[in-house]
Length: 497
Image 1 (cartoon, rainbow, N blue to C red):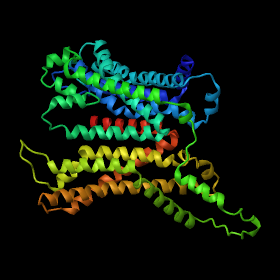
Image 2 (cartoon, rainbow, N blue to C red):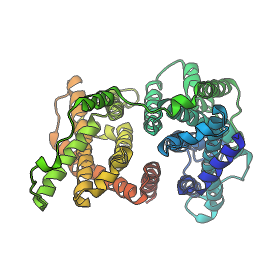
Image 3 (cartoon, helix red, strand yellow):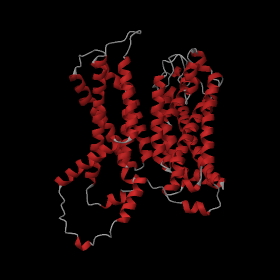
Image 4 (cartoon, helix red, strand yellow):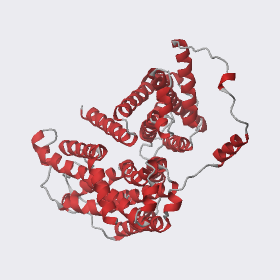
């Protein structure tokens, strides 16, 4: 039975447009990186050196956490969503066969999707010398082992780790939202931890605790010469070996706990919250429903003025739902912490800290905070657009006699309010940093000009892009990936202009 479930998962995913959309985004990005030679290598190091290829694969595996959550979180939750539990209780299938079939089928598809980037890199590096966008001597000879070794050592092991984590989250929480938000929080937590450990003197501890081995890779190759970077792959020895064994062991433990604790009866049982149960109990004690004949006539009103009032009311409700969400608060707290630290430590020149001027407080928002802003806006645009469907209210909403512009207008206004909130946080953190440092030349005119006339419109543009993509794609996970892909492409083209 495991073989049947495994084959079904493979065939089902191969036919899904989202699978090939994820693959295409990684492929196109790899081609662009290869053609332009835009890899983390110096002038004397080949753009397609084994060092640069390994580094890029680790970076993509970090940003690929969203794809891992989309692929690995869906297969188990799909059975809950389609309410097929009765079939599983009547079929001759064991719990472990079911779970292992879903897991390995999805993991195979995830690894297949991830190869899009390597294939894109190969084609891009092959076209690079003749494209004329980078000097031909920046490209070295092709060597397949330069791709295979880091793929097995870092790229696929990182996807295996994150995919297992998100698969387990859905199994234990029975919510796709857990994997969905978990990918963002995992990514944010990694960035935060990576920033806080940069100044640690115990590099050995950092080498071991990095789940993606990015810091380990950097520390091992820190003093490599250009010749070594051009000719040698990073051997899996020392701290790199122990790092990989540690995190593969953690993934194995999570996997085994998930397999042995999974039960059909608990996974497919109907769960009712205490609040909902109490409400149902209260309603059961109420007297019978009032006769429809005793209900008075209601005057129907349909006007643009009423629609605008309703749009504002719905926008306020949507805005409050977002700012009360604990995941939003967690991501916002991480962004504020980065913004404060970037502003507080300043930009030292040869070890000498500079004054916390307003110019630098505004510049600090483009270091790490901007990444949190984009994550929040892209993430919650998908949540707001697809909220009716996620709470199974879409059938009722579609039947209501209200125009679409009122509904979607309220959602966009709520996101515009979030953008405005994110802009004002920069002012609050900047002034707070300056006050703590004893610097009181706040220059509010610069704050207002930069944030309200430049930054706020940029946030709105990103929101409109994500809004448009989610409505056109009409699928939450795929909408996120497409939006991020377009955003990265826009930044790449802007840097090359």
